Length: 625
Image (cartoon, rainbow, N blue to C red; front, side, top):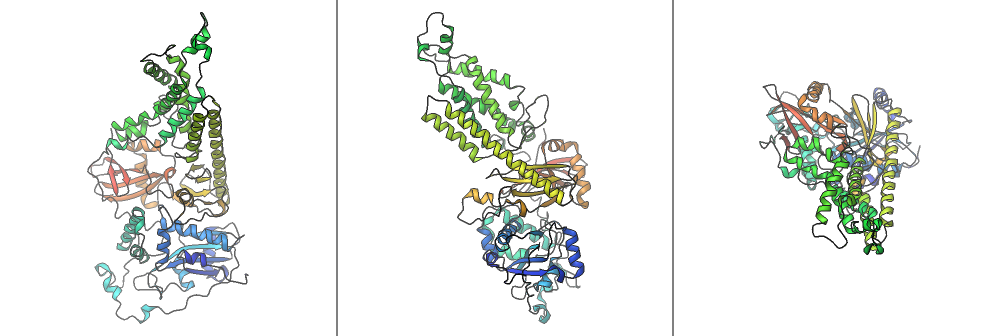
């Protein structure tokens, strides 16, 4: 046993100012056996460490911690605890019990720590702070820290005869001795929690004491996502069913990277005319052909134009939203049709550059054909390294291909291209800078492939260690580093996933003054400290039948084709009927305000389905055509 207590000062500075160390053998026998059986730790766990917060300090630290993920409080708490444990208990391991998807019995643990005092409204009360405290993390660890003594103080409720909380509870719900918050997912308390959760995600600047107090007043030992009530969802049953076409007419940000990569290829393939070709001798066929070669700048422009061409499919947004989703990265990205697209673009470019004529003759479409085809090909290759999926066999197959090594926006990838073009501008007579830049791009993709294999191996190891049957193992690339990944295991019914960095040995500390790259990279934990979450594909038993009905509906066929890692997102009753929508874990990125591509169906009284997209403020109806 360690001679000195653990140093909790790092947690105190983050506002996690409640700590308790309990020996597992000193816990009630049933509780200890249940925890060890339920969580099946792979290492010898001797102690349970309970961490919470009280007062305002955590909310101030949370506001300064960076971009808001989907679960800002849980993510902040887990990240902070991981950093503290790595520094305070080096060489030791722990299993995270809470936050998680399985019940822990936090009130019981709170009673053992001296934090929880029973109240008439079934919420714990801490004499010094009232209800303004919360449980933030519970760990099973192999440490040997001195156990902490439970807090000793009498409950203020014992000497309170007036009991104003009973009179204040809405609709006299406690007048007969009942509970104001029996079910945090359906009662007024649950609605307050859900509303506060939406407010935190939408306006991080408001993570202050007022909303914090509301959440603490509903702090209960419930399953992790029970506070995500959908009572406030569906308020935006938008009458405008179809979005403005401008939503789809905005070319994606990575189109610029595609254009620059095409320019780089154009410079590599550009050939300069020899000086002797300017005055060819009679019958010199090679010199005559050299006179018609495109100028270097023309080849660069041709490569950029060709590499931009595939993304012209954004015009499908003029047809409909679903036409865009079904057709993006389709026929314009097809290797099968590439020779035809190359022919058409090369002919147009030859016509364009030959309009005014030029001394020595204008280039023909044949002179542009190789550059144009290469420009289209490098665009397709740039899409294939992402995980969105590209229909390279269209129109004969709508199967999406992708190796998934690179996030859709990669600053290093783009930086290599820009540096290569800058070097080409300096050494204008040499094609070496372009060749070197393309080799470096291939190397960078190789680094991403290494990170992907490491993430998949981490996912397999987690499945093996926890006895999870493996149907599919994959990893989704994430921003800021080729070693940031969301590792995913599918067991046939549930997705097990964690946001990890495969090369990190300890959590990345981040402060208010750190750059955005560091802030976006911070949520990805070392593999050994990964926080694995579990999502049912079709939700719990109560929602499963509806979810499966929606998933198998003909009106939902496009999403079955589109999604890679689909999970039930919301089930609710609204003006459109009973509704259920799905999300794709492929797009669940920490630090992103909203998860895109969340679609579902509502069934009305007439028995038909109506397609909608889940937005931050409710549903947006989608016209199917």
